[in-house]
Length: 262
Length: 215
Image (cartoon, rainbow over all chains, first blue to last red; front, side):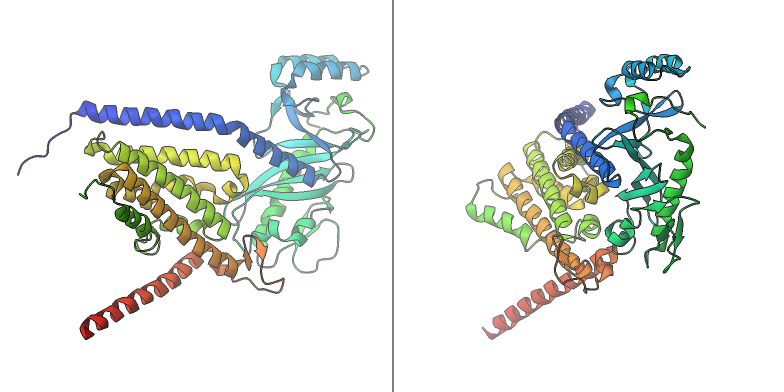
């Protein structure tokens, strides 16, 4: 038997090398070309979700972590620079002794203006037309029936109520578990949900209390997962949320004073 | 190897065979993974079909164009690189243009890379035929694949959700046949369609036989 003619090794390497190089070039160009559109879509859907779960809100700003405490990012977005935040807190909180150190901390953090949380646990503050704070929106995630459920919910710290909830991502069973976002009755069960003493899941009629979520028939596990995610997120954020006693009248720029980790 | 002269007859044959006689889903039974996973609604099926067709046509064109330069030892690797490039591009394009559908299809877009239909066409056809035939074959196969997915997707959406392209058909009292939108429903629906198609096929060949005998 005659051995098949061998192609020299360098030709194989060159072929694959050229193919890989061209492929990389094409992918990078497509990526660069589509990236702004993809980012715009993501930002838009996030903004829509935040404003949906905070019905009273008209604008939003992310919470950023500065020096271990969570604050509302200064006007103009998180990238506007911490110098502005420091200056604002310095002028607005003259009476507070810690304002100068806060300004210094802000400056230390550099142009990043504090650190935003990782996707999946981001938090946002919502404001109404007059610029006063109406509540916070938190992203949260946890295990569902099949895969991770990612959701966002609005929280009114004054009424201590969840004011809205939307599922961002889930792979629950179509027709059963996916009712956690397709069944309007379940979704609207989070429109005014008290979080004290804690959110409970009830099957059937329940007792009509304000902290009760009614489980979906046939999707108890998915319903429980949603409640569990909300509980965990509340426990995590209750201490860390920027607290403000004079929420209705204060401008945001004046509320840089944060009771860190109280 | 077939003659290189392009006859309109052969072009037509290469085009239509993918749609009916060698339909990728119903006859070759290739690409079952996306078939099961994403044909639960008509719109998902269409998007998946379109993305696959895009990748198939692009790769067939390039593979056929480069068929004389690629040494046979590394041909499969080269095909995969070419296919993966188109898949990644399709992924970004879908994400940029129709983010909602992209979210529904999720990981299955990336999995077009391992769709055996695409690699199969490169190995069996594009690498042995001139660019014109390769592209026509890819278009035919792409349309055949998309049509098959669309058929399955429509049937499953109508039975499993009671809607078509998201529009409810039967009113609020319709009790959806939930299993149809789960993966087992994909198998069930495919089985039913194959049954009907093969029954027709058999009847046709049997009637041909009797005609020949009579003649």
